[in-house]
Amino acid sequence: MRRRPQLVPWKAAGQKSEQQSSGDEVVRSTGWVFNNETGSSLTLEEFVATGDSEVPAYLTVFGLRSPDNERQTLVEIGCGIGRMTCAFTREFGSVVACDLDAGFLHRCHETVARFGKVDRLRTSHVADGHTLDLPPNSADIAFSYITLQHCDPDDAQELTAEAVRITRPGGKVVLNYRARSGYDVILLPLGSVMRGLFRIPKFGPWLSQRRWAARIGWQANRLHPNEIIGPLSPLLSDVAIWRNPKSKITGRGARVEEFEGINPHHYWLIATVR
Image (cartoon, rainbow, N blue to C red; front, side, top):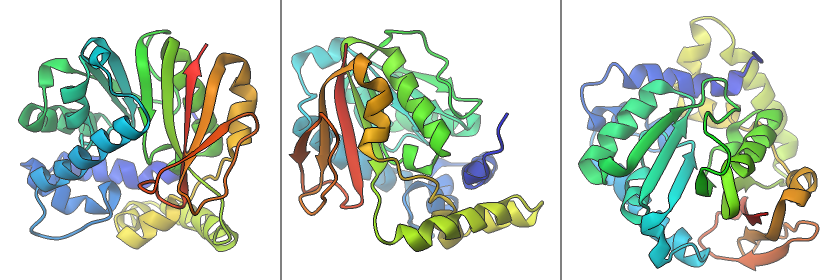
């Protein structure tokens, strides 16, 4: 198995979450990995509320809300402890939450039991970091937000291909990536150095739990839309790149759509699977 030092913060947070007695404590102690917020007063309810506000907005803007949602299956790649998963279970008849940390999947189930519809939830462990243990054509929508940018480039490409594989013909892939910027001249080399430090026994996991270090170490890839669309173009139709109006990112053969709610440093690939 390939070494993936960019996942050290995630693993460290997963181990720490298993030591906590409540979801509130998980949010307070692992805020550096979930939402870049820390503080002794944070609650799981507040954490989930941020997902409750984002999910309906994205589904509406991207044209993914319909009366059929109650009969559809959505697969969430990178669910964490369920920030957005709760809202998805209220929208879709079946939700499969995927993550590389089994501890997070357990916490995700607990979170949805409190704030979502847990009878609609299944979880799937991405044990190797790049393969979804799900059958082909099993999803109507494959969704991922603020996950693929933290992966090794090869893993991000493989997870993208996996999202297409598990989505039925006529279904949608809705995948979020980070675009390149001038800051990457500094950020990407710094990220590589930080990930090297993450490999140091004992010190690495401790360092990865510092918010600033985790954020730098997660600067793992910047995939241009053409790098994603090219290999998969025979499998996709109606390809769109959604971006912030301030962004200039485009993709070959993809129409461009804009939404101010998208982070200026991010873009979404949304396409129909053939």
